[in-house]
Length: 93
Image (cartoon, rainbow, N blue to C red; front, side, top):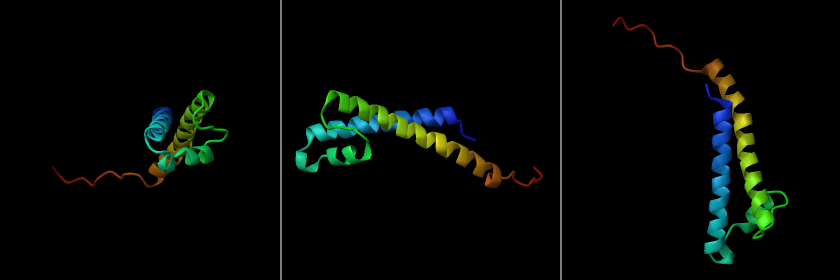
């Protein structure tokens, strides 16, 4: 069974770190190959290379990651209860 708080926070932090790495990648690579168009499409109201755009993208990334955990954990726990690991038969040892 998974802990919803732990998984949601972990995914939120993971998504926020991934966002920061994408922005850093965009700053160190030529404009023709960075990801600002993808970030602008994936994150509502995100604007490339402004302070408020960065902060909004960071918050949105965290919230999307946390949302994934909030949705995933109950589904996983339900399926684990239904189809999860069954006890092994007694081997006599």
